[in-house]
Amino acid sequence: MKQRKTFRSLIAGNRYIVAPGAFDTLTARLVQLAGFEAVYLTGGGFSRANGYPDLGLLTLPEIVRWIGFAAEAVDIPIIADADTGYGNALNVVRTVREFEKAGAAAFHLEDQVAPKKCGHYEGKQIVSAEEMIGKIKAAVDTRQDRDLVIIARSDARAVEGLDAAIERVNRYMEAGADMGFVEAPQSAEELARVGKRVRPAVANVFEGGKTPALPAAELERMGFRLGIYPSQTQRAAIFAINETLSVLRRDGDTMAIENRLATFADREDAVDAKRWREIEAKYLENI
Image (cartoon, rainbow, N blue to C red; front, side, top):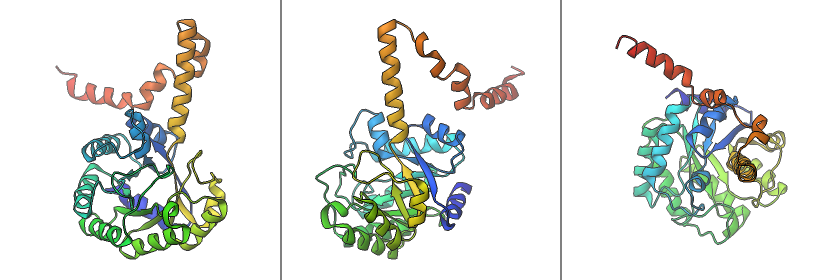
């Protein structure tokens, strides 16, 4: 896939890449239309979009189906959330096969005990570094496209401390992962240490969590090459939907805020309806 080659070239440079989170296929389309170079399919966002907290309650087939829909809808690289790989190293083999077929350009795999928790929840548990190294090796050996980017994530900061988490991530990268992701550093100083000692590094910019949300330029100076922004679009959607429902309940219509809502044309543009009408005209015009 050209998207995989594109993403590899992006992370090989010295720029910091901003990848907004998408919690459904429409949001992924909007990320592309806004001009971003990559989109992050947030597992936590998808869980919440289906009415569940981020506790590993969704299954591999559900996630793969979503990746496939998104891959059909966008042309930019997709970064997917593989959680723990849905089990042990054997499950990782299946996960990588399915993610690759579905169209992911990259995915991150973490060292939590399955089922996992949101990286900013309390009470996380982690597997041994040796078990995770086995998972990384399984992922590396399984991928068919060498451009598929494997991101190794460690949640050990909350359990063993920052230095241990950094050491884990570097060991995972020695085992073949392409990027390192230390989840939930707890200060700007800790972020700077990660950016210096993990190369190339991923930042999770998650307002309301344990990590301070720093500007992209500062994260770039620290050495980070990719930033995922998992919650912003969904929090915006929840806020806007709640406000709209409040007005509708109060007034019986939404005329008071119509100037702030997307138009019918906006909705059509978001899903590229013009292209589908052109396909319809091309193949059905003589019927």
